[in-house]
Image 1 (spheres, one colour):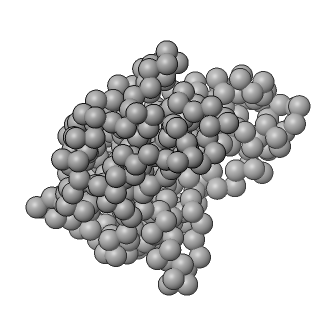
Image 2 (spheres, rainbow, N blue to C red):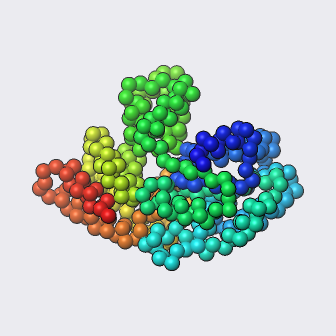
Length: 355
Protein backbone atom coordinates (compact mmCIF):
# COMPACT_ATOMS: atom_id res chain seq x y z
CA UNK A 1 0.00 0.00 0.00
CA UNK A 2 1.23 3.49 -0.82
CA UNK A 3 1.02 6.42 1.61
CA UNK A 4 -1.61 8.05 -0.64
CA UNK A 5 -3.81 4.94 -0.45
CA UNK A 6 -3.42 4.77 3.33
CA UNK A 7 -4.32 8.45 3.76
CA UNK A 8 -7.31 8.03 1.44
CA UNK A 9 -8.63 5.16 3.58
CA UNK A 10 -8.26 7.24 6.73
CA UNK A 11 -10.23 10.09 5.14
CA UNK A 12 -13.07 7.63 4.49
CA UNK A 13 -13.06 6.76 8.19
CA UNK A 14 -11.44 3.32 7.70
CA UNK A 15 -9.02 3.20 10.63
CA UNK A 16 -7.07 -0.10 10.81
CA UNK A 17 -6.69 -1.67 14.24
CA UNK A 18 -3.07 -2.63 13.47
CA UNK A 19 -0.86 -1.15 10.76
CA UNK A 20 2.80 -1.04 9.74
CA UNK A 21 4.81 1.83 8.25
CA UNK A 22 7.80 0.39 6.44
CA UNK A 23 10.69 2.49 5.12
CA UNK A 24 13.09 5.29 6.03
CA UNK A 25 11.19 8.17 4.35
CA UNK A 26 10.46 10.46 7.32
CA UNK A 27 8.06 12.96 5.71
CA UNK A 28 5.44 10.42 4.63
CA UNK A 29 5.88 8.50 7.89
CA UNK A 30 5.02 11.61 9.90
CA UNK A 31 2.04 12.38 7.65
CA UNK A 32 0.65 8.86 7.99
CA UNK A 33 1.15 8.78 11.76
CA UNK A 34 -0.47 12.16 12.30
CA UNK A 35 -3.39 11.30 10.00
CA UNK A 36 -3.96 8.00 11.82
CA UNK A 37 -4.03 9.73 15.20
CA UNK A 38 -6.34 12.47 13.89
CA UNK A 39 -8.72 9.88 12.40
CA UNK A 40 -9.01 7.98 15.68
CA UNK A 41 -8.72 10.67 18.35
CA UNK A 42 -10.09 14.19 18.59
CA UNK A 43 -7.89 16.93 20.06
CA UNK A 44 -9.71 16.60 23.40
CA UNK A 45 -9.23 12.81 23.49
CA UNK A 46 -5.47 12.83 22.90
CA UNK A 47 -4.32 13.75 26.41
CA UNK A 48 -3.10 10.50 27.96
CA UNK A 49 -4.39 8.42 25.04
CA UNK A 50 -1.17 8.18 23.00
CA UNK A 51 1.55 5.75 24.11
CA UNK A 52 5.02 5.49 22.56
CA UNK A 53 7.22 2.38 22.65
CA UNK A 54 10.64 1.65 21.14
CA UNK A 55 11.09 -2.01 20.18
CA UNK A 56 14.86 -1.64 20.43
CA UNK A 57 14.29 -1.17 24.18
CA UNK A 58 11.21 -3.30 24.96
CA UNK A 59 9.98 -6.68 23.76
CA UNK A 60 7.17 -7.07 21.23
CA UNK A 61 5.20 -9.06 23.82
CA UNK A 62 5.29 -6.07 26.18
CA UNK A 63 3.83 -3.80 23.51
CA UNK A 64 1.04 -6.30 22.81
CA UNK A 65 0.31 -6.66 26.52
CA UNK A 66 -0.06 -2.88 26.70
CA UNK A 67 -2.40 -2.95 23.70
CA UNK A 68 -4.57 -5.57 25.39
CA UNK A 69 -4.79 -3.54 28.60
CA UNK A 70 -7.81 -1.32 29.09
CA UNK A 71 -7.12 2.23 30.22
CA UNK A 72 -8.99 3.71 33.17
CA UNK A 73 -8.64 7.19 31.71
CA UNK A 74 -9.21 6.79 27.95
CA UNK A 75 -11.82 4.85 25.99
CA UNK A 76 -9.76 5.11 22.82
CA UNK A 77 -6.00 4.78 22.51
CA UNK A 78 -3.21 4.95 19.93
CA UNK A 79 -0.02 2.97 20.59
CA UNK A 80 3.00 3.73 18.39
CA UNK A 81 5.83 1.17 18.42
CA UNK A 82 8.96 2.46 16.65
CA UNK A 83 12.06 0.45 15.63
CA UNK A 84 9.80 -2.44 14.61
CA UNK A 85 12.71 -4.08 12.78
CA UNK A 86 14.31 -4.75 16.18
CA UNK A 87 11.61 -7.37 16.89
CA UNK A 88 13.01 -9.70 14.22
CA UNK A 89 15.13 -12.72 15.15
CA UNK A 90 18.80 -12.51 14.28
CA UNK A 91 19.89 -14.23 11.08
CA UNK A 92 22.17 -17.23 11.22
CA UNK A 93 24.56 -15.46 8.86
CA UNK A 94 25.31 -12.84 11.50
CA UNK A 95 26.53 -9.32 10.97
CA UNK A 96 27.63 -9.62 7.37
CA UNK A 97 24.02 -10.38 6.43
CA UNK A 98 23.09 -6.92 7.65
CA UNK A 99 22.66 -7.62 11.37
CA UNK A 100 19.12 -6.37 11.18
CA UNK A 101 17.79 -8.85 13.70
CA UNK A 102 16.68 -8.12 17.19
CA UNK A 103 15.63 -10.12 20.16
CA UNK A 104 14.95 -13.58 18.80
CA UNK A 105 11.45 -13.14 17.38
CA UNK A 106 9.69 -13.36 20.75
CA UNK A 107 6.07 -12.31 20.51
CA UNK A 108 5.37 -13.40 16.90
CA UNK A 109 2.59 -15.79 17.93
CA UNK A 110 1.18 -13.15 20.28
CA UNK A 111 1.16 -10.69 17.36
CA UNK A 112 -0.83 -13.09 15.19
CA UNK A 113 -3.30 -13.67 18.04
CA UNK A 114 -3.69 -9.94 18.67
CA UNK A 115 -4.27 -9.08 15.00
CA UNK A 116 -6.96 -11.77 14.93
CA UNK A 117 -8.71 -10.20 17.93
CA UNK A 118 -7.57 -6.60 18.55
CA UNK A 119 -8.68 -4.59 21.57
CA UNK A 120 -11.74 -2.46 20.75
CA UNK A 121 -10.91 1.25 20.71
CA UNK A 122 -7.14 0.66 20.51
CA UNK A 123 -5.12 1.43 17.39
CA UNK A 124 -1.64 -0.11 17.20
CA UNK A 125 0.93 1.35 14.78
CA UNK A 126 4.31 -0.27 14.10
CA UNK A 127 7.04 1.84 12.48
CA UNK A 128 10.12 0.30 10.85
CA UNK A 129 12.42 3.12 9.73
CA UNK A 130 15.91 1.63 9.56
CA UNK A 131 15.87 0.46 5.95
CA UNK A 132 14.77 2.01 2.67
CA UNK A 133 13.54 0.31 -0.51
CA UNK A 134 16.70 0.48 -2.60
CA UNK A 135 19.82 -1.66 -2.87
CA UNK A 136 20.56 -4.19 -0.13
CA UNK A 137 18.03 -2.54 2.18
CA UNK A 138 15.14 -3.76 0.04
CA UNK A 139 15.74 -7.38 1.08
CA UNK A 140 15.91 -6.33 4.73
CA UNK A 141 12.62 -4.46 4.41
CA UNK A 142 11.05 -7.50 2.76
CA UNK A 143 12.22 -9.58 5.72
CA UNK A 144 10.58 -7.13 8.14
CA UNK A 145 7.36 -7.30 6.10
CA UNK A 146 7.45 -11.10 6.18
CA UNK A 147 7.85 -11.08 9.96
CA UNK A 148 4.84 -8.75 10.31
CA UNK A 149 2.84 -10.64 7.68
CA UNK A 150 -0.05 -10.94 10.14
CA UNK A 151 -0.52 -7.16 9.93
CA UNK A 152 -2.76 -6.66 6.86
CA UNK A 153 -2.26 -2.90 6.49
CA UNK A 154 1.37 -2.23 5.55
CA UNK A 155 2.50 1.05 3.99
CA UNK A 156 5.69 1.20 1.92
CA UNK A 157 7.49 4.51 2.48
CA UNK A 158 9.84 4.93 -0.46
CA UNK A 159 12.35 7.74 -0.94
CA UNK A 160 11.36 10.63 -3.17
CA UNK A 161 13.11 10.91 -6.50
CA UNK A 162 14.83 14.21 -7.21
CA UNK A 163 11.97 15.28 -9.50
CA UNK A 164 9.31 14.25 -6.97
CA UNK A 165 11.15 16.11 -4.21
CA UNK A 166 11.24 19.25 -6.37
CA UNK A 167 7.50 18.90 -7.05
CA UNK A 168 6.79 18.45 -3.34
CA UNK A 169 8.88 21.51 -2.51
CA UNK A 170 6.91 23.64 -4.95
CA UNK A 171 3.60 22.24 -3.68
CA UNK A 172 4.47 23.00 -0.04
CA UNK A 173 5.63 26.48 -1.01
CA UNK A 174 2.29 27.16 -2.73
CA UNK A 175 0.36 25.88 0.28
CA UNK A 176 2.37 28.19 2.54
CA UNK A 177 1.93 31.06 0.03
CA UNK A 178 5.71 31.31 -0.05
CA UNK A 179 7.34 32.93 -3.08
CA UNK A 180 10.59 31.31 -4.20
CA UNK A 181 13.18 33.44 -5.94
CA UNK A 182 15.17 32.34 -9.02
CA UNK A 183 17.08 29.11 -8.49
CA UNK A 184 15.81 28.56 -4.95
CA UNK A 185 13.70 25.46 -5.68
CA UNK A 186 16.54 23.73 -7.55
CA UNK A 187 19.12 24.67 -4.91
CA UNK A 188 16.97 23.51 -2.00
CA UNK A 189 15.96 20.19 -3.58
CA UNK A 190 19.52 19.41 -4.64
CA UNK A 191 21.39 20.62 -1.56
CA UNK A 192 19.04 18.73 0.76
CA UNK A 193 19.52 15.58 -1.27
CA UNK A 194 15.83 15.25 -2.13
CA UNK A 195 15.05 14.51 1.53
CA UNK A 196 11.33 15.29 1.77
CA UNK A 197 11.41 15.56 5.56
CA UNK A 198 14.22 18.12 5.49
CA UNK A 199 12.54 20.03 2.67
CA UNK A 200 9.33 20.42 4.71
CA UNK A 201 11.20 21.57 7.82
CA UNK A 202 13.49 24.00 6.00
CA UNK A 203 10.62 25.52 4.03
CA UNK A 204 8.79 26.25 7.26
CA UNK A 205 11.89 27.92 8.68
CA UNK A 206 12.43 29.91 5.51
CA UNK A 207 8.82 31.16 5.53
CA UNK A 208 9.36 32.63 9.01
CA UNK A 209 12.80 33.99 8.14
CA UNK A 210 11.86 35.64 4.84
CA UNK A 211 8.58 37.10 6.12
CA UNK A 212 6.35 38.45 3.35
CA UNK A 213 9.13 38.71 0.78
CA UNK A 214 10.38 36.10 -1.64
CA UNK A 215 12.89 33.51 -0.46
CA UNK A 216 16.29 34.15 -2.05
CA UNK A 217 19.47 32.12 -2.34
CA UNK A 218 20.96 34.38 0.35
CA UNK A 219 18.20 33.27 2.74
CA UNK A 220 18.97 29.65 1.95
CA UNK A 221 22.71 30.12 2.58
CA UNK A 222 22.05 31.93 5.87
CA UNK A 223 19.46 29.53 7.26
CA UNK A 224 20.74 26.16 6.04
CA UNK A 225 24.49 26.26 6.69
CA UNK A 226 24.72 22.46 6.83
CA UNK A 227 23.12 21.90 3.41
CA UNK A 228 26.43 20.76 1.94
CA UNK A 229 26.99 18.40 4.85
CA UNK A 230 23.58 16.93 4.12
CA UNK A 231 24.56 16.47 0.47
CA UNK A 232 27.68 14.60 1.57
CA UNK A 233 25.49 12.36 3.74
CA UNK A 234 23.33 11.68 0.68
CA UNK A 235 26.55 10.53 -0.99
CA UNK A 236 27.21 8.21 1.96
CA UNK A 237 23.69 6.82 1.61
CA UNK A 238 24.08 6.23 -2.13
CA UNK A 239 27.46 4.53 -1.56
CA UNK A 240 25.79 2.29 1.02
CA UNK A 241 23.26 1.15 -1.60
CA UNK A 242 26.09 0.63 -4.12
CA UNK A 243 24.18 3.08 -6.34
CA UNK A 244 27.01 4.26 -8.57
CA UNK A 245 24.87 6.49 -10.78
CA UNK A 246 23.38 8.39 -7.83
CA UNK A 247 26.78 8.61 -6.10
CA UNK A 248 28.42 10.18 -9.15
CA UNK A 249 25.45 12.55 -9.51
CA UNK A 250 25.84 13.76 -5.91
CA UNK A 251 29.60 14.11 -6.43
CA UNK A 252 28.84 16.27 -9.46
CA UNK A 253 26.59 18.46 -7.27
CA UNK A 254 29.40 18.90 -4.74
CA UNK A 255 31.84 19.87 -7.49
CA UNK A 256 29.44 22.38 -9.04
CA UNK A 257 28.79 23.89 -5.59
CA UNK A 258 32.52 24.47 -5.21
CA UNK A 259 32.93 21.96 -2.36
CA UNK A 260 36.55 21.44 -1.30
CA UNK A 261 36.77 17.71 -2.02
CA UNK A 262 39.50 16.89 0.55
CA UNK A 263 37.14 18.33 3.19
CA UNK A 264 34.28 16.21 1.84
CA UNK A 265 36.51 13.13 2.04
CA UNK A 266 37.39 14.07 5.64
CA UNK A 267 33.68 14.12 6.50
CA UNK A 268 33.24 10.72 4.82
CA UNK A 269 36.13 9.36 6.87
CA UNK A 270 34.60 10.59 10.13
CA UNK A 271 31.21 9.18 9.17
CA UNK A 272 32.65 5.76 8.35
CA UNK A 273 34.75 5.65 11.55
CA UNK A 274 31.81 6.51 13.81
CA UNK A 275 29.56 4.06 11.94
CA UNK A 276 32.17 1.31 12.46
CA UNK A 277 32.30 2.12 16.18
CA UNK A 278 28.49 2.00 16.32
CA UNK A 279 28.52 -1.33 14.48
CA UNK A 280 31.09 -2.87 16.83
CA UNK A 281 29.20 -1.57 19.90
CA UNK A 282 25.93 -3.02 18.48
CA UNK A 283 24.18 0.37 18.63
CA UNK A 284 20.80 0.22 16.92
CA UNK A 285 19.18 3.64 17.22
CA UNK A 286 20.19 7.30 16.98
CA UNK A 287 19.55 7.67 20.71
CA UNK A 288 21.93 4.83 21.51
CA UNK A 289 24.57 6.31 19.19
CA UNK A 290 24.27 9.75 20.76
CA UNK A 291 24.39 8.33 24.28
CA UNK A 292 27.43 6.14 23.51
CA UNK A 293 29.52 8.95 22.03
CA UNK A 294 28.44 11.40 24.72
CA UNK A 295 29.74 8.99 27.37
CA UNK A 296 33.04 8.89 25.45
CA UNK A 297 33.25 12.69 25.66
CA UNK A 298 32.31 13.28 22.01
CA UNK A 299 29.53 15.87 21.72
CA UNK A 300 27.00 14.93 19.05
CA UNK A 301 23.78 16.52 17.82
CA UNK A 302 20.74 14.31 17.32
CA UNK A 303 20.78 14.85 13.54
CA UNK A 304 24.40 13.65 13.33
CA UNK A 305 23.60 10.63 15.50
CA UNK A 306 20.78 9.77 13.10
CA UNK A 307 23.21 9.96 10.17
CA UNK A 308 25.72 7.70 11.93
CA UNK A 309 22.99 5.19 12.82
CA UNK A 310 21.74 5.10 9.22
CA UNK A 311 25.27 4.69 7.86
CA UNK A 312 25.85 1.76 10.22
CA UNK A 313 22.73 0.03 8.86
CA UNK A 314 23.71 0.49 5.21
CA UNK A 315 27.17 -1.09 5.50
CA UNK A 316 28.40 -4.33 7.02
CA UNK A 317 31.44 -4.23 9.29
CA UNK A 318 33.62 -5.57 6.47
CA UNK A 319 32.34 -2.95 4.02
CA UNK A 320 33.06 -0.14 6.49
CA UNK A 321 36.61 -1.41 7.02
CA UNK A 322 37.15 -1.67 3.26
CA UNK A 323 35.67 1.80 2.79
CA UNK A 324 38.12 3.28 5.30
CA UNK A 325 41.02 1.71 3.40
CA UNK A 326 39.75 3.22 0.16
CA UNK A 327 39.33 6.61 1.89
CA UNK A 328 42.95 6.39 3.06
CA UNK A 329 44.09 5.68 -0.51
CA UNK A 330 41.98 8.55 -1.90
CA UNK A 331 43.31 10.92 0.76
CA UNK A 332 46.87 9.94 -0.14
CA UNK A 333 46.17 10.57 -3.84
CA UNK A 334 44.58 13.96 -3.09
CA UNK A 335 47.77 15.01 -1.30
CA UNK A 336 50.06 13.90 -4.11
CA UNK A 337 50.55 15.27 -7.64
CA UNK A 338 47.38 14.53 -9.59
CA UNK A 339 45.53 16.00 -12.57
CA UNK A 340 42.21 16.67 -10.79
CA UNK A 341 40.63 16.13 -7.34
CA UNK A 342 37.42 15.08 -9.06
CA UNK A 343 39.12 12.21 -10.88
CA UNK A 344 40.41 10.86 -7.55
CA UNK A 345 36.95 11.07 -5.98
CA UNK A 346 35.24 9.49 -8.99
CA UNK A 347 37.68 6.57 -8.82
CA UNK A 348 36.90 6.28 -5.09
CA UNK A 349 33.16 6.11 -5.85
CA UNK A 350 33.67 3.46 -8.54
CA UNK A 351 35.74 1.30 -6.16
CA UNK A 352 33.34 1.61 -3.22
CA UNK A 353 30.31 0.75 -5.37
CA UNK A 354 32.02 -2.21 -7.04
CA UNK A 355 30.07 -5.40 -6.37
